[in-house]
Image (cartoon, rainbow, N blue to C red; front, side, top):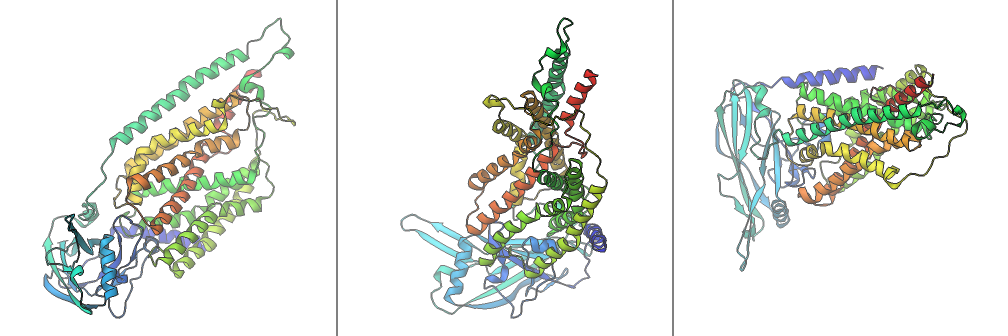
Length: 593
């Protein structure tokens, strides 16, 4: 497992290296990279900066990027700007571009679509608009398109390190592209640079507010209070009301009439199915694989949140979160296969090789399918969201050399260390007929309740998550997000116990798949909310952005389904049996003895 060891070392080095910052000497040249451009309201519709005809060098030299930066859509290239540390610059010529008509039309289209650019200097983003529009009057109507042709950079430094970097475009009169009629047309670009000393420490530079994206996320107490109250009510319901119902059931079931033959005693409710409740489920391999992959993503999510809170890696650094997620997914493949194979063997599964293959492809298969469609659309539009061939090869090698071998190893360990399935009640050979139930106790209604309540616990927080993922917000409240994550898990466990009890009370012993789908159905509510967010809360448009949004949102909801579904089977990752079912029928057996 040399590949896994190497990958672990890379992850540790990657996280520790985030705390270090670059240092510069006076008048030392600092490379400013141009990165990407795209519509302001379509954050994932990005193109290479040099796709616009603005001061493109004869030979474009790209910066070596990390895996996370490439996945994020970054394509950093050397620029013509000459920035020297602490050295001011005043109206220095950058280049003179000679434009044809098609070039001007391309610039007009970019400005009308509100294109903004992103530069990078010392890992600090610098953003600004390519130009601006002026609309005035109704009759006659005036439509003017202006191109910014001067970059006014403002840098702050502390000692020998850069603390902040910004750009202003409005200090020089822009070029009116609508008034250009003679071609070829010349436009000269210039730039300035101002340096100012600050007392802000280098470690605090990423905590400063973004001057381009004005909005910032603050602690949303309404979401937290709403979720905490919901957890308290649910726990109170499960611990108090449900326990009182069980106590009443036990008292009723154990009343023995001395004058009545015990053979004539008629049971009802959940006690009558004690010989069927642990009947093994159908599709054992699929259920086991879903439990394994769900457990893996529970671990990955918790690990990323803990690392973010501990500042083990800089979540603002380009692509750092993506890199951590990819490496953690590969390294935790052992967990998915171990849990799946262990449970599959425990419930009597025989074809453990197929179970390992199914576990390894249960997420990677849909991911590859969605990515293939998204990447094809991005490639058609020449977007930087399309992954280069080298990156695709690297990702495949990570899965082939690390992910899949760890899956196989985890499956072998899980199979060998599996114990027998010791149900507290003996199962009959012939299954009992399941009586009809009222509509309000049917499976669809249970899924509706089991999905809506966990969703309502995080519904407010979902807006901030979507605004960060599909907008320009910067999420820094990882402590709050971790609390909401724990609340979500707690609510899911509580509602799972309650719904399982009501199902057993209806003399329906098919709880294996029902309990998984009941809580996992919260993913349907998340997807409905995503559709609402896209239509009502965002200004995203266009084919590329639409495919990106709904494709990856669908994949995220699939992961959400697996994560919440696994909680109904095990609250402690011990697959002996469903904790609530096991406890109820253990109490029944004790009372019978």
